[in-house]
Length: 439
Ligand SMILES: Cc1cc2nc3c(=O)[nH]c(=O)nc-3n(C[C@H](O)[C@H](O)[C@H](O)COP(=O)(O)OP(=O)(O)OC[C@H]3O[C@@H](n4cnc5c(N)ncnc54)[C@H](O)[C@@H]3O)c2cc1C
Image (cartoon, rainbow, N blue to C red; front, side, top):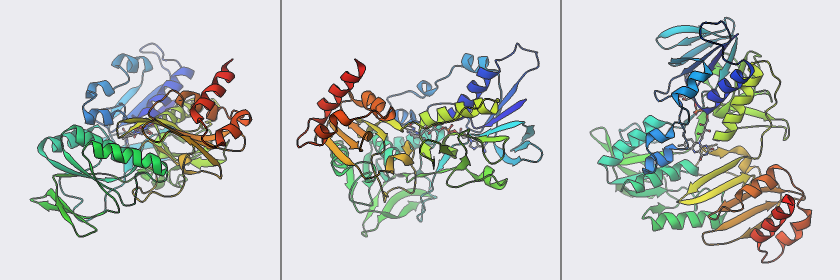
């Protein structure tokens, strides 16, 4: 059996681990299961969320590699550094850029997603930058070393990571927001203001109701931006994060079913039984909610890759989505987002962003219990019988208990009224409830 995986991200590597858990590696020279990984990232497999810490200088690039060469050797797979340009379903082969074709019996497409382009005049100038991968991060650092002033455009986690990385590298940063607050469809007004205040304290200039109409240039390089309100400001670089798009082109060319991502059933199988998809590129069906969801999160990508690998190797393992859980940093403040917490559109983003889940914005009617209005803040989305979601900012004592309460669908009847009471100390009520569950 020839297993081929396109994409050396976390989904692809997890799939190899799963296949090897079913077909352990044989000794050198013996015939056995053949696994081939094809990846076009010159740096191979590394932590993409870690790029934010590489930008700020808190982590060396070497710290972003979660697997050693020894780990890879023990998985016994062939690694082809290259780019797949075409899939032939009839012949079960892949065409590669300047490399021989590769044949497969079972194929996994785990090619991730890419940043949506900034579509304004001047966006092709040198110094207009995105953050998809390690090479992008290195390019940003190169421009940051030469520059003094930067503009950041976009929303969600990656836009803030760009702001923070550039501030840490000593640049004067302007952050353009189209609406009246940051990340309005995930954070509530208080939470947006906490983040914005902290950015201002770090010296960031926020421009609300602002939009870049044009990036202006000199000798092919960025020299400034022209804003919607007519202002023209000088800068040396423009970094953007306005959303991402799953890389569905390979799948589209060969008639695989696509919606926003590649559509897969609960076994991560596409409409071709020999082709699977997982990670950021997949729009995975969740049998519990009955919905097909896009995530751009490390843990779901890993879980999907692993389940896909097992199923490619003949097991029947359904991928059942747990409520999305992300521990991130917003303006230096540790923030955990669990389950469903917001709704609607955010003017700064087109669709899904990095470190984001569509589930976060599918809020049904529910009540809000909240506490803390300065730095430590806790917001709970209270359903009829269970907690639907939570945002924990600052003090993280309750983030793991809340993850367990939400993903376990624990019955909150004993505390529901108390949580919704006036001036409720929501944190204490949850802590007591959780302590009671453990005994
Ligand atoms: C800056 C940044 C911040 C993030 N922050 C968070 C966060 O806070 N929390 C969180 O949970 N997640 C975060 N994420 C998202 C997380 O990293 C992704 O969800 C995860 O990496 C997806 O894994 P994947 O394997 O599906 O795809 P990827 O990691 O994107 O890997 C896909 C691989 O396929 C390769 N490829 C593409 N096309 C081809 C082709 N034709 N031929 C060969 N190879 C190809 C790509 O080069 C890439 O190496 C962040 C991502 C970034 C970039």
